[in-house]
Length: 504
Image (cartoon, rainbow, N blue to C red; front, top):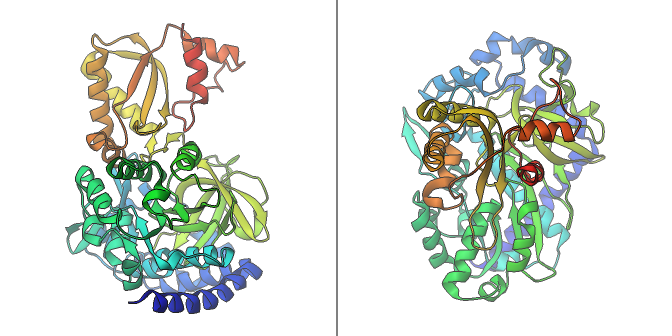
């Protein structure tokens, strides 16, 4: 299809959709309440709908009183039944797709249901809205004169019992509408390759001669690809490869550690960055202004939001509130009810509201300590289980530990740096590290993917802490006592830098 026709279609859609966005900006709470009633009505005859008598739920208060808040473990059994081909369990339309992501205490991986409604009315609607907002803010954009270089689909799609599972990005690429495929590069065939070493070079080969006007993907993975582009072409800047490149749409992990490196690769001062907030469970928020670090919460994607203040999260006083009751600058855990059949589901993220009119947010972290700089979603349960297994194998004993990321620098890959105080050290720390790395791979599929052939993550680096290091650090920071603990995992190097300085 010729570019002028694509531009005409895009302009028509953008004008129409912008009026809808303005509607939920003006009446946000009404939009959310109406959406909740629609979800309840849709699912009233499902197994879950009958269990909680959805037909008699007429307002949010009854909904909140009747339906419990759960994490993935609470829904895993019914999701497993759905994966085996049972229908009408938690959503009325058949669930064919399941997005595979890092696991929980009970399982190595989670399998998040993706309905046709969530594909169309959430994920794809968000992609169109992202373009809508960007073009509204940049009227001289030449975005549609070229293609978007997308990076996703890190795993193959696997069929089981008539259902399909794989990375969300692979599911989205496999189902994308014609207009998106036409305006994207590389081809679906290359995008869905499972071998990342061959895939990266195949993407480079397919895209370096295309007219690329935008980038889309997770910062850590994209950085690996872009460095490979420069290595292959011998260019010093990506603008030499793609002179019409104007914006990078990014999400998945924090962009802060990578920003300076991207600015070196993309030195034009008018180059733009647009952040998104999405997950396997849904697409939640979009940066709606140039040069902003706030994201507009999207309220009409089939997702009803609730929030738990982190001050009472996981306590006997835990209680969720609707959007209409949130306050500025309070750290909240996010609870969602979706058009894929997740009911009052804890996604594990925390956010803060920076504006209430409209509702804008910043993602503040996770409800548990974790490392997710490279999309690996390493949680404490993974670390504890892996260390337990390895200590048993090596007859080692651990007093305390902490871990932090080693950020990518130039062409050097990232890694995790561990600082471990042993009561009984292993005889061979290199063997201990090898076992530990393999144990983490076995427990966390996202970590395993990032470690594949060192494509994004190098092997962990383990430092042996001197005796009483953590005790001395806690004492120095006036944190001795039962209420204070050494931070196990962190997305920054703040703690480990202090500790390494004391490790003499």
